[in-house]
Image (cartoon, rainbow, N blue to C red; front, top):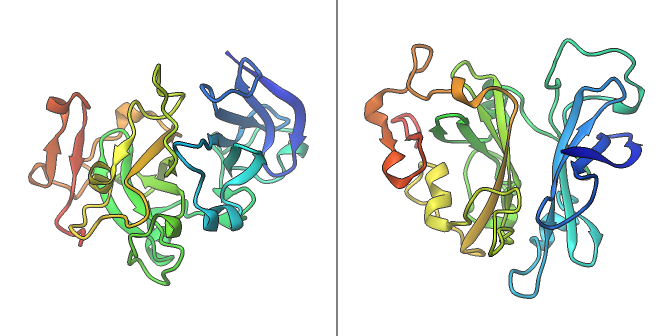
Length: 256
């Protein structure tokens, strides 16, 4: 199970818990809790290597990936304010904000705010919701298709436009020979990564492969792209069960 990593409280994130209370490249995921015992953040380590490389330097310089030691970087998102001084449990069981630690970038918590802030609308996946992406070099929702410009936290919303999940995106492959190391089962070549975007122009000039790690803040079984409260129809969707993915992926007609 998860146990406190050091027992100290990070003023931005809270108290870190990791598998076994240790740091290791095969169990890099971190959960943070405030002093009232509620989830206050999520994060992961990203390990560099001679063969896989390191996180994009521009994202390191902007502190999305914070260097911990020679080959280890950390990325994390806070979901509560002042986690080290929480005395009572909040009425928001999964938090009330999304802030990237280090970069101090506030992420949208509703689909409406994502649209207003110029995030690009992507595909909907069962269990996850509708994906939104942000190109850091763009003032609108357009993409340059440069991995170094992609904000490495992808936000997903349910059919009512409420926050549902996030994933961390790494251009440094994190899966190992003997397991996924808390990341998704296999790395995604650009073609599969582009399945999240629903854009025919999608490609990336400075990487060919990705690792992704999802965190779900609601019941994944409850999120269905084709549902009574959704504007998505079955005609917009592809059944991925034949590929062993057990889900539906939808590219609605209103996505450019």
